Amino acid sequence: MAGALATLAIPYFIMLHSHESIEAAQSFCPFKMATGFPCPGCGITKSFVFLYSGDLIKSFSFHLFGPFAFLACIGVLIVLPLELITGREFFQSYLFSKRIAYTLALMLAAYHLIRVIHFAYAHSLDEILRQSIWQ
Image (cartoon, rainbow, N blue to C red; front, side):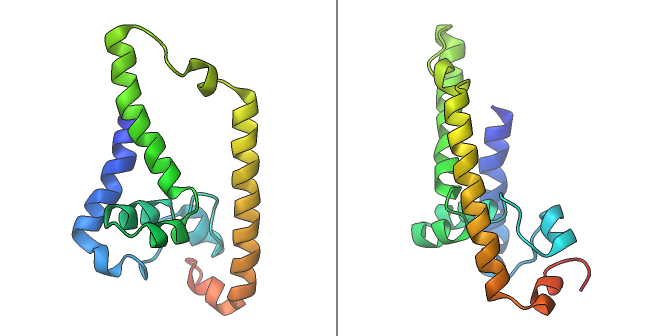
């Protein structure tokens, strides 16, 4: 529950303090800083920031799964307290389903592969290196 709350709170505070420069800001992702290429999760924080601002299109453009991750965090914050209060487990079969986990992993892997290929074609080697710590 704390993880879901932090996942929702951090982008909110980023939006409050630096919303105007968030598009051009350097990524905090260690993988992107080391390689210049985005990791599978790159863009989710910026996606949340634009979701908080009400710009759903831009939110999806930063990460296709950002708005869905946002809804999942909201769901966790609603369902977990209900489970604690009632003593019932509502989504146990879904949370521990290998089929759902594999499907989501394959979707994320396919999305990431498409993003990396597009990123490599859209940027020169110099631009990629500028996005890393090796600039």
